[in-house]
Length: 115
Length: 113
Image (cartoon, rainbow over all chains, first blue to last red; front, side, top):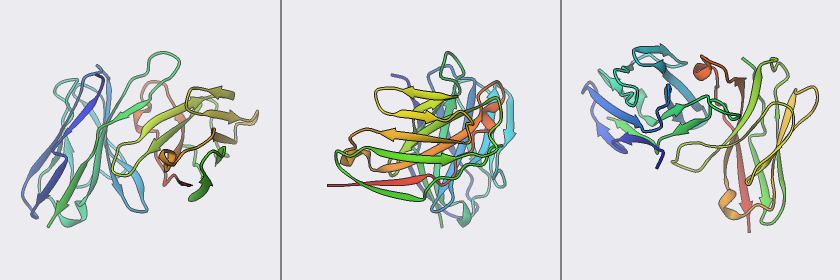
């Protein structure tokens, strides 16, 4: 089954404790992205990657890092989490084949609370 | 990037047809219009995409007038399970466009019994 898998689904941590949220897709997509979703602000892109070893900042990259060492994986790293990073995070991947292009497939989400 | 404007919320009743309109006055020549649906605490899911005129699939129809400055998502005979947030996105779908499809705040559709 084609899917984007995020782990963990829920995470409670404390300020300053480094954490990684993993994302993996099995569709051989070139593009992957991370979003955060906050009430009233919709989905905002954090980082995106067009291919292996190619990443770039989205709208709200401060406080986050990413890496793309393999095509299928795109982890999100919070080196020193702060309470304002408490949010719902989504990973997405996309392709551009056929008539329907650049459709983004989303993971189930990771709800992060930073105390 | 084309800015989009959608109603914040809409209510409907089961069995009715629902039309959600999105305005995108500065749409560019190579921009496509894509709609996503999001249920609470789930990731958005693709519904439909179009460039001009009308597109129909098993879930919805998308109407795009000739000037492409707006588009209308039509959901036939909605049910309670169609209660969700609907996002209209406008942007290019060529290489390098993963950055450029920005989600706004969407339209909260509530279907009432």
